[in-house]
Image (cartoon, rainbow, N blue to C red; front, top):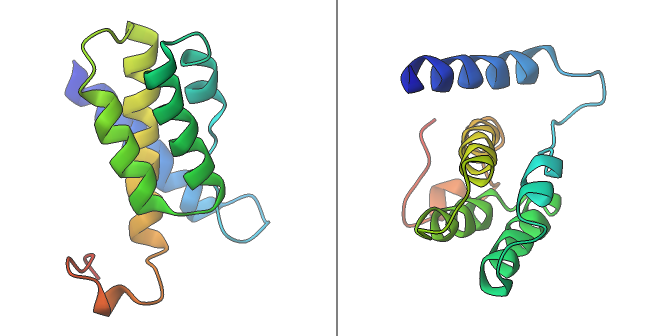
Length: 112
């Protein structure tokens, strides 16, 4: 069941990127992540806040690094886990669609 949801979320994200909203480059919607982590412990909230700041700066590598840190916390609520998983999928989709300009010089080049 999780795989079906994950596949549906990924398909929706890709479709949204392809269709777009007529404004050019897509951005990450961080509202669900912010809402779900608003009352979290300070260490966890700080990591979520860094992920949101990186998303606004379109620094997808940092977003994924912070989300990865968040995923390791055992005290996450189901709402937080869902927001986290959705954000990871959207970030991955955007990172592939909008690689950094110096992608060939990165130690771990993104797929082309």
